[in-house]
Length: 103
Image 1 (cartoon, rainbow, N blue to C red):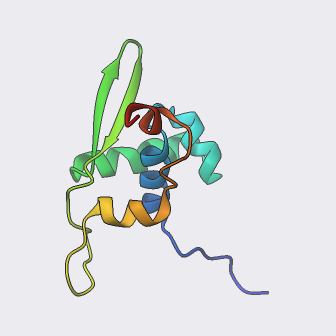
Image 2 (cartoon, rainbow, N blue to C red; image 1 turned 120 degrees about the horizontal axis):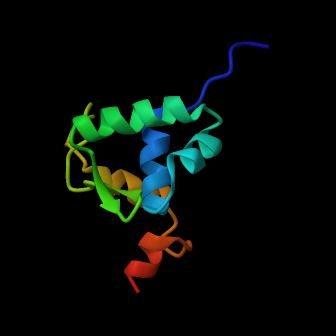
């Protein structure tokens, strides 16, 4: 069979992970994506540098927050925001720290 491919890039998948639970550690993100922790770190660093993710210290851990009001990097027609895309991909009733904060 051909090469394995996915509809979403690893960058988009990291955004989905963080949107689902902003308390995830890099190790958790790496496990969810099936990549190394170093790769997950690089992706989060790129998203942070681009302004799509904000990293905040919470004790000894980091918390990540998606800047969901920003437009997608490559718009198709009207420029949807990251929040609009994540709204399609993330179950708002799912458990996790983001879902708990909205209650």
